[in-house]
Length: 437
Image 1 (tube, rainbow, N blue to C red):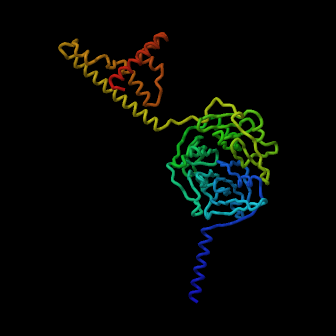
Image 2: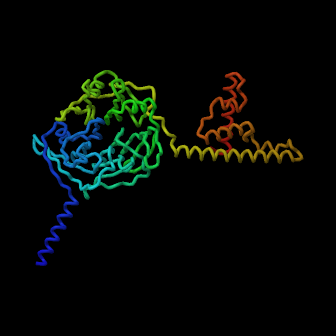
Image 3: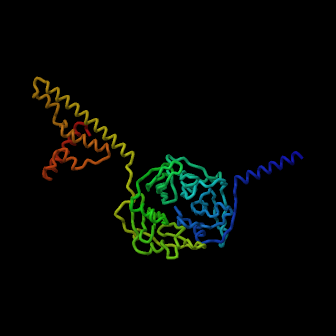
């Protein structure tokens, strides 16, 4: 009797443990064109984008708290997956037969509510969730789905920068995720962040780098047109972003360029019609953009070709770059070294002049041998010092600055140019001889 009770206890514990570690659920749905295409294609897909106000309802969710949450599709070398926004739920999709698809839940997630509107992507065939919001906080956490534990784990990155699924580009060649920081209010501290910043996350190095401030001509459109859509186009090394009929652009992060769509073909496809139908579930393979329509529950797949011939370059950059901190440091150190060298030369020269003035024979040839015509004169030293000071501040020393230092402002342009050239050449010549550089 005691052994029977013990066996029942063990069996109960095993059932409890199994139910907590594996949340295996399966469902069969009628085949849909979008899903059938994604499940069978062998082409890599870096991103599947969605219309902001349209939420996929591919499978039915019994949980009332999350049944209306968005459903995101991800395709990688391991297959096709569906994720529920704001949760850690992950379903793997496989073809059952020509008329149906099977969804199998593969995660063991318990908690949710921390990652709404996060950036979902795949790197090295591993599912990632980056950023998101929930519980009064917008975060910049990098999380990955473990195939071994069937749950989400966090990865350390050098700096947490809050991020949402606003605009991003996954570059497989550079192994980086470029994303846009947008203004928000930190509810915990009341601190306001009011800038649009292009940022790069190096995925292998786990390092965040803020690249620059988004151009005002584009950042203003995010405020004016909150229902924009974007589609990553790997073949064009950028993202297609549509703010409305007359504002459709191709933005290239790595060349810092903006191109505008010409013609009506692409604009007509992206902007739908007067009934309010929008593009959703959009992605690009090679030179073709694929998408579904927001009012179509059958998820019929549409497409249009795309190339650089469809765009014309805009006269402004994508962003105003931040100064490279390491470059600025090297310039500062270099300027400091030059300042020290110049100071040393100035001190030695003053010392020589003092020694010469106290000599019994101030006009002897000894001073001329030591000088050899390679010491900087006071005017040259003043010019060098001003250049160093401007460099240390990160500023340029302009032609006007040189003219002022040399007292050339009232001279003719020809004389200004001649004296500037002679002075700079003389300084370079002396520096080369004195320091063998």
